[in-house]
Image 1 (tube, rainbow, N blue to C red):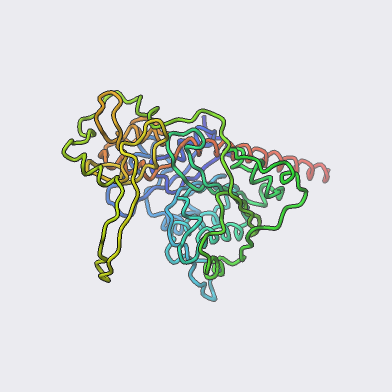
Image 2 (cartoon, rainbow, N blue to C red; image 1 turned 120 degrees about the vertical axis):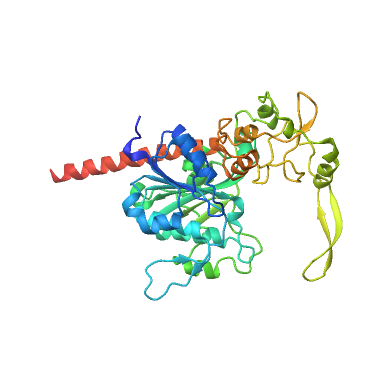
Length: 436
């Protein structure tokens, strides 16, 4: 069935299609997508995306080039813009006197999102990033996220965010990501009480429940004073925000309305089943021999995952220091959610950060298979088996998101979108009635 016109999606930085898989499950229809990897000639992620969804509406090209040169001509209208993008330097170049907008020095992917929002004006936005976005950079804690919020406010969007640990909502991986949702103020209206939005009425609260702060705070008629007030000029935010602060003022949840920010530390409230790594591993029937650990290399694995306090010398300055790191579980426990999958998960070489488990059937130590990594992110097994190597398949899962989390959020956005449409239709009907 073709998507309802009001529920169309454009997907940036599409990867192997995690956003699309989740949103189609929750009722949305993707009409345009972009995936392009600048550092490699082979476009494995884009090829996988096309293999699973087909080529229609898909573009494999530099998004900055696409948005600047072809946005009006080649990108269809849509209601929801989504994308997961790397954490970068979002500093803002000082505008020239004749400039009408802002331009980033480095964070080119964010500025492509900004330009897309400015050009297409979608009512809804959902973005995903690593949770350190709330803290970066080290010299101006929280500046990068403040720039993004300031840009959204400048474009007329109100926003909410949440740092989500997927394992706390029943998924078998402890993957932490920040999800940022925004909608256009002129599309859905100004009906936000920030505390109620944060804890009970917002998209994030409905999709991923959290523990309530208690009825007195939720029932307050007036909003408390905001935690942060952002400058309306993103350049000013870039220059001044976070200077001298050792920690970021942004907690793991918050809302932004016209540059005013309310942010609080919240706790997940999930009552369903909690899945573990062993639940995924138990489904695997055949393990290629190459995934079992060579007994001669077990000691190397143990060293890398073990505690260390070793003298080292800086190659540049000659300064001597002690390098320390704690012990990691080896093998990884099967009765707990898996650690976060990283892009370096693939390959046979020993590593501190790759998963290593005791195979339940044979008792031998082994790495996780690409199919297990896919299921840990909520993809169907074999999703990335489209001609790329096992190492590359693991890399794709290190870059992917947990599909089920986005599915929950997608349903909540759908509900809000439907409510906004109904409200606008009622307003139009009243206006029509007034004139007749």
